[in-house]
Length: 113
Length: 114
Image (cartoon, rainbow over all chains, first blue to last red; front, side, top):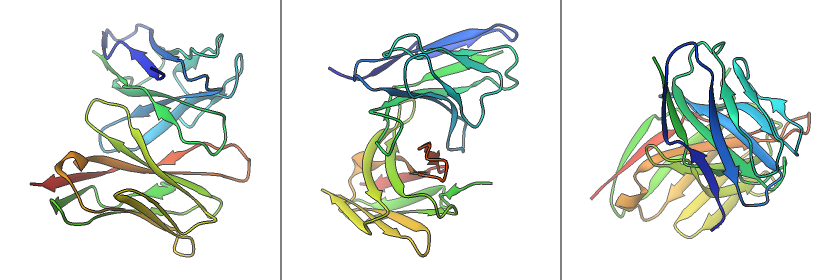
């Protein structure tokens, strides 16, 4: 079955620690995205990648970093510089960075205390 | 500045009746719109899309209407079913830079009452 997997579903970290969220897709999609959702807010774009070894900052990239070494993988690192890291993180992919619908993974809920 | 707005945070509808979810946008460069449905603790699932060259797109019980002059789109669900209870997000894309990033609204929580 083709799809997007994110792991783990729930993640707990102490303040000051970096943490990496996994995102893998087997849809053969070129474009991948990371979003953050907070209660009562829409999805906000953190980073996106059009092709391997290329990625761009989204609207709220501060305190985050990504890599795209393989087409199917787009991990997100939440660094200690991110002031409010507790949120629901969603990874998505699409055929290309164009007007195609995006397919989302199940999400990772990160709680930092 | 919220470029995509869903002004109704919640909506309750009786089973079998029509659900109408609304979305307004401010950027006239947006030319592609999508609706997503999201259950708690899950990723959004794509429902239906519409391009700015159309004013209506239908898929089964779901119809999206686009009024470009009013910068308004709506999602109609007929008939509504209890399984439709979820949060619905509209998203818009297309800008002068040619980078098709989607801007999401804040969502409307639909509750279909049995």
